[in-house]
Length: 372
Image (cartoon, rainbow, N blue to C red; front, side, top):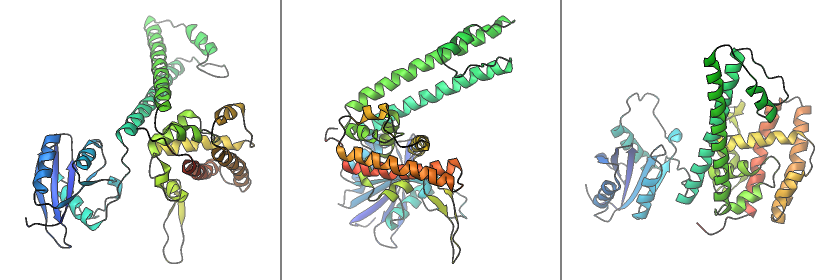
């Protein structure tokens, strides 16, 4: 290959190997398949050294996926540009029915040279570690819910229906302990389900404690605290939003954050016809979920509850003012939408969209600490 000042390299990554394609920087330059290499860091470093031996500036890209960001960090440390791109936004030809690692790598190199790829935000190692911890807690919470559903289904199959007000309380535990069956095997099933629920609850409590301890010393701790000034955003919701979105200052405007969260309507307009549908549901589903859950609290009149007041202590005045302004507006907004005949789910989604804008405003006022 001739010497060029810039080379665009597409990487199709997998667990054991990486397919590499190289595109020359000129408009109609050659795009060739470099070959398959091992995913070991030493093999990656050797490949980079060979491509950079003539002094060319290298621009790497690969799709976000289960292989994570270690490859991105390695390439950045070697002094080269690297983008992790969104797989759902990679242009694809409708008639292309052949997909191989080689073709994907060549396509990435060509599109990267043309500037047609959309990069995703790459968290630093500390942020990614906290995010994994929060997601582990979420998995534990899902496991607890699933185990409880298994027990309830078992009891329903045998006609045992709890008539109390709220399940999973002490009264409900006493009711479970009082259940008796004619066959001994059913007692074993009941005991195993109860034990599984207790184990899942202990695991969830342990991870929740770890999240609280880790978040207290995290660089984004001031932002997590400030977000809790918002009604409907308690600690777990705030830390989940932060670990999934990162620093909201990377969004220039609030509508950009709304679109990133998939809370804006879809649109299919042509000519004089304008047609809008439901929300896009693009972007991060975990962050969108905590906003939707929090938006339901704005069904009630605006007020500062004791729980919110406790969270306001020590927060910057600007964050408190934004949160109160949000509560007054969003409570009135919900009532207005309901009186206009909107479904509750539609109104709550609209509230969640505006909540994102107020969180963006708070994030602009409160900066993270400089520690890593």
